Image 1 (cartoon, helix red, strand yellow):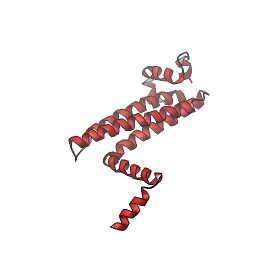
Image 2 (tube, rainbow, N blue to C red):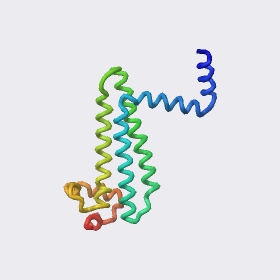
Image 3 (cartoon, rainbow, N blue to C red):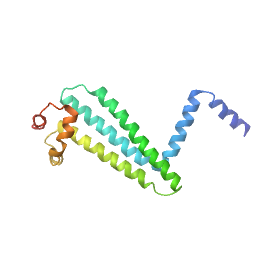
Image 4 (cartoon, one colour):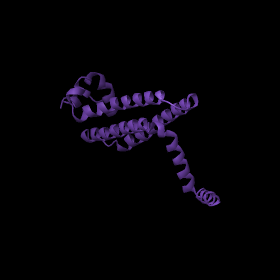
Length: 156
């Protein structure tokens, strides 16, 4: 037992040891609802990829802005999910984390909406997304710029 405590003490004498201990604690905390985090992370990554493809098609260099927005999204969604999870752990120790799943659902739907605008820019004749063309015009304008005619982009 003394040897284990000595090794643990040695590990916590370095910054890497503390970082590893904090990462392990965070992963252990979110482990019961890890799939909610996977779904939101996957949606953010898919939105980033479609945003880059849309920027390439429009011949715009917005990669650095897209990366900044992606980092902001990761932070905001992570804090919302972790906060809801902490509240639910306080209210009931075992069981379903319905608030975390609900927040993850809304975050993924928001990312799908943003992703849909980029998909329409890349492939304007996509049948499923044609249904949302009118509703997505505002989202597309926010992605390209306010003084661009969205109908010109979507006529391809």
